[in-house]
Length: 581
Image (cartoon, rainbow, N blue to C red; front, side, top):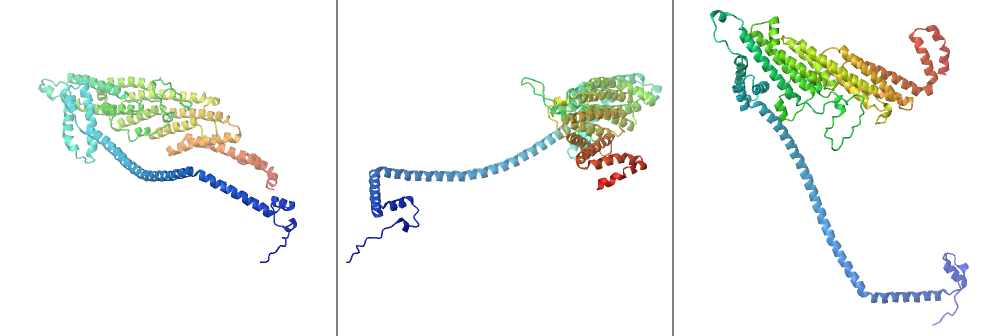
């Protein structure tokens, strides 16, 4: 074999083009033999490898133990994974069960609600339909002047009205109690009309033929019925006012009062007053002047059992309607039974009902003086007007003196409350308000809108033209509100904000009035004109920086056009071309 002993061609840095490693370049430059250097590195790597192998052999037991631990951990993790998979599956089942239970709960809750409603209505129906032994015993055994008899008589009247109403609905259970109630009615009438009045012992022919009822009989009747009606109204009024709502309006519920709720002490026993929003809003109270005007009377013990409470005007309506009914029936009876008419019938009726009417006037004088709800007071005024008209329609005795007295007390109290509202608005310090003033409608203005709307709705339902006294009160209150709006507007910085604030407040008033009132009113017309004035001022304020010359020209010419000053208008013709150009 022939060997080539020719030395290799030396590698120079100039022959290497693509070498970027600085270490290699330095080695080549210094003339280092790469083969020797490579062999050295291989020996070092072999030594390091052998050292690593020896170390692994020495640590073989520990590595085996680590391997076993890793295997155990993998088994443990696999078990945990199985547990979590099972738990996840069970959670899915629980979720579906919860949804199912929730659906069942909604269904059960609805069923419970329906049953409670049915139970409540059915219980009330049964209570109104059933004739208890206490009623039968009270009417048959008690004297006509006894308080128990009067109470059961009142309850019997309610049942008669209820049964009569159910007859039109073809309720079959009415037939079970109809005869019993009718018999009790006849027995009560017999006891009231004849049992309470001792019949004459004997009549001779002249007396038997004479149509007038003997004087002693008339006197005994007047005395007995006067006491009975007095006892009835005294008891009825006393029990009804025990059912009055405890959260009625107080002297602090004023139109200009702060809207914040003052905190009460933990140890205070005074209950929280109702929201002022309900004091100044009408709600459904106007139904007293329409659908509820001749609704059944309030039964005190039934309302107590049902935990019902009533506002002042509802109690007032029930008492006045009871008076109207009793007066109507009593006047017709005394005229027929004692064969009197005209002034004689009125005088006899006055002897029977005079004491009761005097007691009503005295009681309402005290109750009205403690009423701070202006809407309630005006509702009562409208009720007096309605019931006075009802008695005229029935062609029975007029008790105008009574209605005039009650209305006079109500008007006097209403004027006092309205003056208190106006004074609260007048004394309202805009700098001390708890809520900041911005361009949104103010809460006092919203109260005023609801309050004025409530008064106007009641006035409309009364069927009469707006009373001059009421119009004067509304005008005074409107003036105070306009003054308050001007004071509130001064708290805003720019003229635009002031105008927007006033426009928004006028808008809330008009919105509330338009929502409840159908026809045009003096108040709505006035506020609409004020709003239009502010809108025009706002438009002018926005456009003035851009069209100030045109706006000034229009403001100068409009009065001249209204006054037909054509010669003066000619002086402004030269400005037209300047404005157009």
